[in-house]
Image (tube, rainbow, N blue to C red):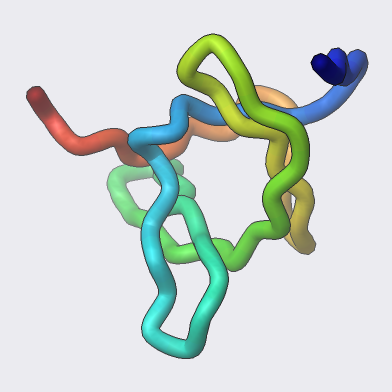
Length: 66
């Protein structure tokens, strides 16, 4: 088992499959949203580590309603 510290993570449900391959997340700010491509890292407990250009701590991401 792996454990990561001081990383950005999102709920697994926030991941979007991108048409060009890979994954992204929907970054939401000020009533607008944009798709940000991400690289995945460790995962567990329903969350996944993400890295990518334009990501920052505290960003809101879109998650499908259940």
